[in-house]
Image 1 (cartoon, rainbow, N blue to C red):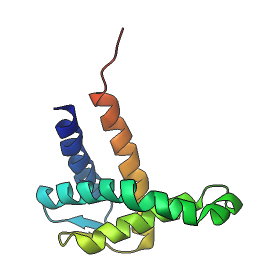
Image 2: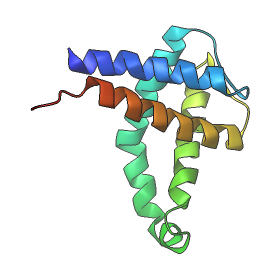
Image 3: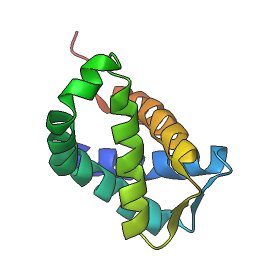
Image 4: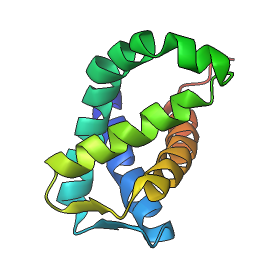
Length: 115
């Protein structure tokens, strides 16, 4: 049940982020859920491969190249989801930053606190 709630909140985070950024457009909540699902899958499958392949440039840039990888993953998902449009690389970078903030806030809401 907790996984379903997190999935729905991830879709909400995609919708809220698209609402805040004028360069990102989501047609409706169904596309936001699909984008959230594909972003999660890309972070699980594609991102580790890209991180390993770009270790030298990541070290030289002191880790800032990981932001580029996040933006590239957003652009990859944008090409796969028809109702999810990002106007360019910089909008994808901003989208990934704001989306991570929303997802961390929502994950804080769904974690159980043990006293």
